[in-house]
Length: 315
Image (cartoon, rainbow, N blue to C red; front, side, top):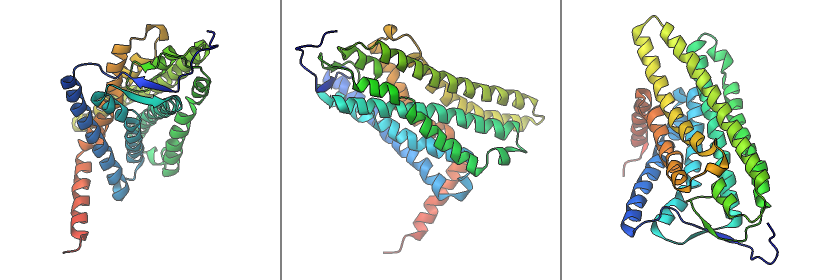
């Protein structure tokens, strides 16, 4: 498209969820409550992992990484979502929008890789228990953790660079509550075919490859559980894996629906609703399902609180 003599857009306006003030205030309270609970739950997990040496094992180190990730993952989008519920004019600069795009997709890719790594960790622990300490040593655990972050932040780098070179000439309104890929492409007056194709390819590769690796690990786990001789062992192992699989199903189900599909078939209204699940809901479900239902975690938390209380000086 010819952009000659067209005004360059310097900021965008988020439309968020339209509606009467009463509805938007209700959504604000709901989203704020979930956001604060998510921050508290994930911070609690990080606190327990760092404070209790018995939880400094690969499984809980990965969970600590996931919780730290979820805090920033939600913080990248939810504040703007809350702002759109209170105000009808919420703006973001073009550079700020591209920055939000990069960090959101970087942390999303990191979460995909981390979930695959965590599934592999459970596969080793259940299917190869005698070799687990050797195959998943502390050094290997740290390498997997670092690799997840590095790979996640590399994945959307090239699409972000290409987006930063797009021209935006108007309109300014983003039909979303954060800078998602398709709403950005709709506002560009440049040819977006290359960046759309590259973004679609990158997201599909990261999501589907990590999803297949995750499901493969859990598939082997299920087979191993069925072969266990003890009914109590089968019940305990399956209960743990079922909780993990619930998180995986919710997260991958929503992001596959949102990003592994032809860009032309994007529906903005459905896209915003689906985005709430992986931006707001899943970060809260993770701490609830992964650890806060765990008796050992709750015991460690009570122990940490008791130690903290006794360490306070009398006034």
